[in-house]
Image (cartoon, rainbow, N blue to C red; front, side, top):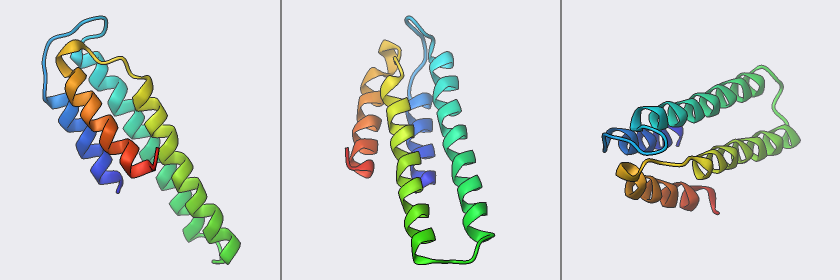
Length: 103
């Protein structure tokens, strides 16, 4: 699933050139930062899960946290102010992310 988000973000970033209040390059850096944070959170969560004895409660907490990480990523993408050149791609990617996160 995280590879889907990375692909979506990269597609948005690579789809344009130019800039407004932020340049496409700056926008791309912001989006890449969100992806990096999300990936590091998933990696830390996965490492924690893999190093502990599995329990039903542990599994519940694991999946709840994965959803929280996705929602945090979605909120970060919502907060981005894309340059006009990528506004349509940003909106499309945001729509996909909202569908994936349920909101």
